[in-house]
Image 1 (cartoon, rainbow, N blue to C red):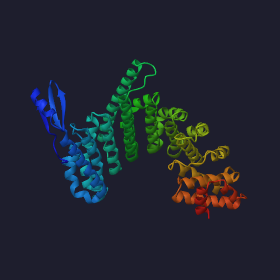
Image 2: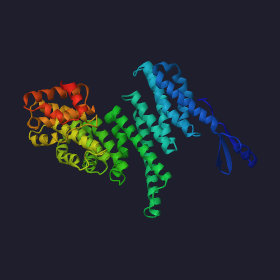
Image 3: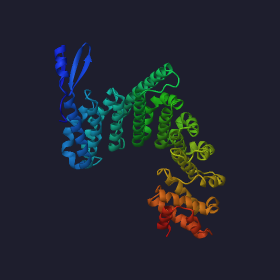
Image 4: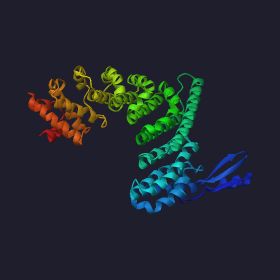
Length: 460
């Protein structure tokens, strides 16, 4: 069933249309004065068969290898362009990376056979990014793309592939802007206070999903290709500059996240784009939307960690802005806490990688931006820097031992630190307690019973 063709009939007269209408499993599509009948029952079965292939290939992985080449050629890749049925294209988009992964598990990531399969596959995926007409399905195609690139890994895309990707992304972004303008015009024509209809809300949600999956595609390319992606990427700079100034928070977040990727994966080369990055990061830290504050705060920390000396002056000047993020009245509420914890981790990165000597006041204030008990990516940076301060017997921690102990206990209970990070942090904290006169029993008593139990497991 997965290889089934579309059953299509051109209905020339009303009698044929009436006959088909009486039969179940048909969809009628008017086209230039005629009617096309599509047998959807067969297409539903094709969709479900491809979904079953996805399950088998995901579970069996390398053991599914004997079937990969035939299924990829006869079913999955043609399915990306099966325009008679959206669900078939969606299932095919999920099938492609699953098949690639199965083949990789069987042959290894350096296999010439895998690279040969990828040459054919990537061309078809890139074609789908240009040809897909449905917004929600286009998002699935971008997901297919970035999952496939993640599987193939380092330098799997040629310059031609990257240029093709950018061309498709540019068209998608232009069409997105047209849809946004259209919705804005429709909104201006409605009466004040009138809510947007369900169809409009669904369209907005589809566009948000599309932007998110496009972002993940950019992230994955930068991750595996670094500075070699910069020349094609530059062609979209007008979109970044426009999006970062948009009233739409989704567009601002889209631009911020991509700038974060440039900082993270292009190192000192990112300074070439500082005029496009600096002001958006500062403004982003003051954005009322928590996801945007999080992205901006993270970006400043990445600039300190990966950007090199050129970014030093900027990141040090940004410390007061990061403290502002941590001091907001809503700093520990709901999604806002992730922005706060990223700001905490970013200050830690600046301090850790800083060559400045007069940072004691910042260190003292930084301790009060803890704990990090929600964001598992931010927590290691914060707590490893805390352990460093303890090892150095820095006044920032020696003067508030009980508070530091509680912050460590909260992270252990929340499991935002574990493995070597937890081991190193606990060892440093034990040393801190041993040289101080703090009553640990009193500090423990301030914690809830569950946290006390966790702490005793680590501290004895």
